[in-house]
Image 1 (cartoon, rainbow over the protein chains, first blue to last red):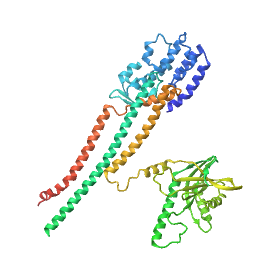
Image 2 (cartoon, rainbow over the protein chains, first blue to last red):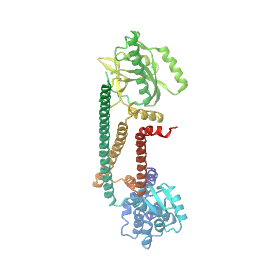
Image 3 (spheres, helix red, strand yellow):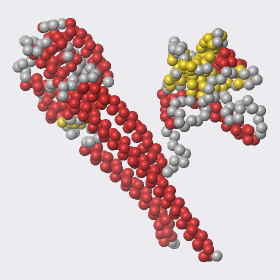
Image 4 (tube, rainbow over the protein chains, first blue to last red):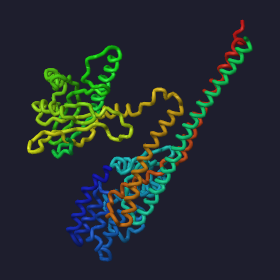
Length: 225
Length: 299
């Protein structure tokens, strides 16, 4: 899909930069990557070994920040604000966009109240502006805004980076889908057979009826004569 | 005579050409049947059941790709075993005016396999195009056959028994469609049987269409499932962008479970049932109305 294509170049660029740098410079690479407006995928950068080295050192908060952007939401940031470095406005925006994506993971219909709470937005106008400008125009989300029912129906949401356990649940969903479509195929075949057999019965019935009519006509004509 | 080609040219065939050739053959064959039942004809060359028709194919050659767009018929002169040259040139000129980019790429004929006499025609065309293609359509209908009965032959210079000779070699081809062609081919594929007035056969045909579509979807999902399982077992390195796309896809499921859908669906179902009921009513009641009517219009 096009989002992935747009991101592919940026991902390569940042992975290269990350593998070439070390230490504090790497921290600035991470900050740059997370402020980049069209980049939403961070698991490749997370996988770079130089960054994994950050674990446990004083720069570990950069690693945590990267993990937050890969899997977390805006409320996670607010709860852990002490441990994480200050976010620039670009990063704040991106984190909010990623929050919307995470919310879209679980429900297809997102009520405005929940969205306003998660995104720290107080009025509906601001929320709608955010959704329209930052989410739909960038193409990460597609859906309909229902102001009367105060909800946002999501039709399509770009994928976020996968948590380690999600692969299993994805496989489960796929196998459920497969079994459902197999059952559907079987029931369609049965319906086709039913339609054919009903057709046969109908023809037979018609033929019987016509034969009876013929007989009745003949018997009448004999009686007259 | 025919082995597989090694010239490295890619052939792209448009469905219009196939339809043209089969149309030409069908016309000639039905005219032959019609006229032979009325009078005896002189068309003894067209042996019995399978007349051979000939024509020219035109298209564009860009580098190594040969794309065959269109075709037109030619007259075959059985006495000299060659195609009518003057007619070919006149047609070529006419087509050049309408399609300035198209060149004569070769010729076509019908039959079950390429024959020796075809080589003469092939050589005759070699002065227009130094390597013409020969498109052969097999008009015999074989219900067990799954592929198109169209073969494309090229000519290659092979040394056989010390003499360099031109022989035909088969080439593979792909079918390429323009949007307009796709629409018409789709339309032809969906033709219902002409007496398919019975509701059951139409229903069966419709259901069969849906069935094959779902089957294709099913196989694709199976591939995805297999891929993910292999990735989980570690046989394939994890490719994150694909996983992201799959996860965004899976989030669109379940697609048909909301309450609103159930409501709308039931409403439409009820409407259809009601209309069917009403139609059946009217159907039965017309006899009754005819018997009531004299009472109502009595003067």
